[in-house]
Image (cartoon, rainbow, N blue to C red):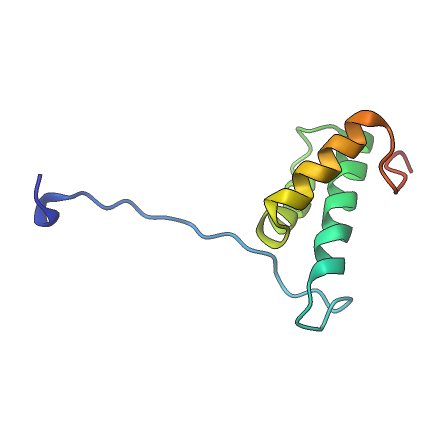
Length: 86
């Protein structure tokens, strides 16, 4: 198949929107807050609750995968540094 015959499909790029709480270029706190908010939302409402997805999309676009792996491991081991049940 040549480059001229290649089929292209539309792609929807999803990223975090502007949040007035985090106006600076450094988005580390924005990443952290969305990660925590997502897991609090899922614990309170369940994974099928659609408004939780906004936090998911935000933290997945802002946070490096290494941080997410570390935080997921901490949650599994019970030593995550934030309360997710409130």
